[in-house]
Length: 225
Image (cartoon, rainbow, N blue to C red; front, side, top):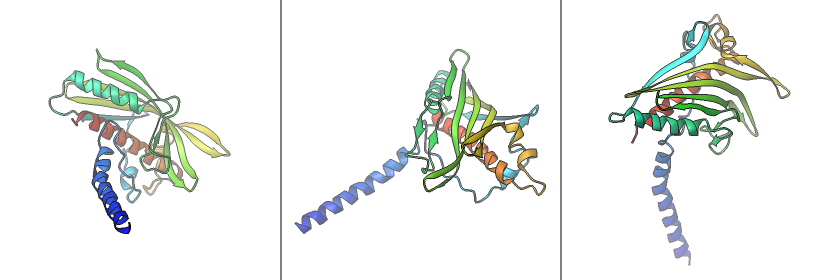
């Protein structure tokens, strides 16, 4: 009996060993791939002047992502529409819970607003939680709101993220709405030493991470089979 149990254990662990790489790979592909772990080991890039781009006094991020060769404009649009519908589904959640580094939670205001196939335009309204840190049974976070405009071209996608606002926690479950221009720009978030201010700095970091993550997700959607 002992030998049978021992043999069954070996078989069980062998199956787990074979399945684990496939599970990890499955989490790294797809329209909503797992987010890379973010570390705060080096914050210097976040404190660089211009890391939060401004146009006419407004915070505006603009990026272009190349598509995989061979995809038609219609194929790219279909992929982007599918991605946007999943990414901005209201009240949706990705990840087990907020302690998962890949956790993502949309608020009820998130939505895919426009999907204009003829003109290759997709517009989304972002409303989600941005988590700064996690402690046992608690999380330090903000609620972020923004608009995302996507333009599908032949061979590429342009996206613009703008009109960014945050709910700033004032304690006792009270929040104050603050726009990005008043909170995360160079003038507001960087001190005279060129370092990130403690309070505003974490919002600046998470905003840059958010833009980079969206860029990564779009690339994943249009650069893979």
